[in-house]
Length: 224
Image (tube, rainbow, N blue to C red; front, side):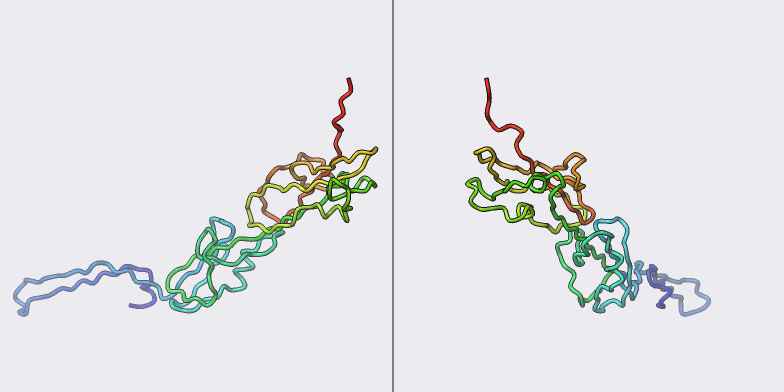
């Protein structure tokens, strides 16, 4: 067999003739077809559950393999925080270890990471009002900075859905009463908070979610 036969199916046919030329009898035997396996293994790379591979490579079967830099670059999506390794399964749970021997064709999978950070919306009362705010209702611990109430940043997988966290409340004194400045439900896509707040979103890029703190419009006193 030659290299040109790789990937083909071969059948061997053996024909037996009689010893004497004037005898017409002959017998014939045929083997089952045999697939000629290529001496090279194919490696395909998929990123973020895309249907088509972002990169392909070949190597000799039985060779140690390390993911080339070109595959990392091909998998990286713009405005993301980088590729989170390579895995043997589409759910990205079984890591591929660099230098592993590759005997057969191999598909590898990766996910890009996206970073979620939080910030104060421009209209947040914690920024707009000069009053003093506190971390506790007893007003014993001053709020050092409005950013202290923001939820921590998170690192997620590309395409993952996130429910936006709600920031902690702040407290302040007004007309001899202690009042609460609470964080509104949901997050805004822009610092002006002009659009409708989103409770959740599917993230495909690094994202800043803007939160809005408001003072109460109703102080609980009812007049008759």
